[in-house]
Amino acid sequence: MASAPQKPSLPLFYKDMVPLNKEAHTSWSTRQTDKVTWLADHHAIPLTVEEFPSAQRFYPIVFSAGSEPIPLALMGMNEGVNVFVDADGSVPNPVYMPAYARRYPFILAKLTPDAEELSLCFDPTSNLVGEFDDGTPLFENNEPSESCMATLKFCEQFEIAGGKTANFMNEIRKHELLIDGELSVQIDDSSGPFVYRGFQMIDENKLRDVRGDVLRSWNQSGLLPLIYAHLFSLELVRDVFGRQVQQGKAPQPQPAQV
Image (cartoon, rainbow, N blue to C red; front, side, top):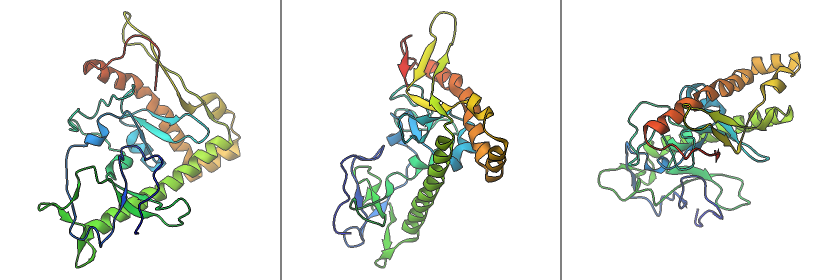
């Protein structure tokens, strides 16, 4: 763990990434916060499929554009707008918080492109990890603390969920269920409609044409309920946009990109 991970491009939220090292960070601690400042300016947050049942109660779930799409929770309908998190990072109302956001500032990452193992890393710019008098130690008696091990376990569970998510995406891509998405929101007669594109969604017409034996296997494996969680969640687009209007964050009445 002597060298820093390769970082030509960093994951969402992360401004830097440093491997946790008991020699270098033996006196370091983590600090708790109720302000998710790293989330305030982001509207599309990665999700794992295990989170669909909880997330679909609060946000639309869509899939990113491109050949390797991932699920996204739309916490706002426009770039830089999060209607669930205030500018200072406060979360005024109870809401499901995606695991991707909850693991920050920690992450499992390869220290080199050809590394086989993942190492626990953190973002040193977060102000949540450092030499704090009031923090929770990362190491005790020169060994990872209980808190550190709990963080590692959470990140490991996230990676496992990521593998399940990849399998889900491979299956719906195999059956060519994804199409370019378009969502239209009409708040009143005086403006709009506001049209959102730049993402993917499951085509209900294609879903109806899937063979019965495939649908039965999806139902038995739990994949089919996940598909419907995505489809049902799209009804929340109007609700999320309405929050933007209430918060004075509505876009100008012209087509916009998700």
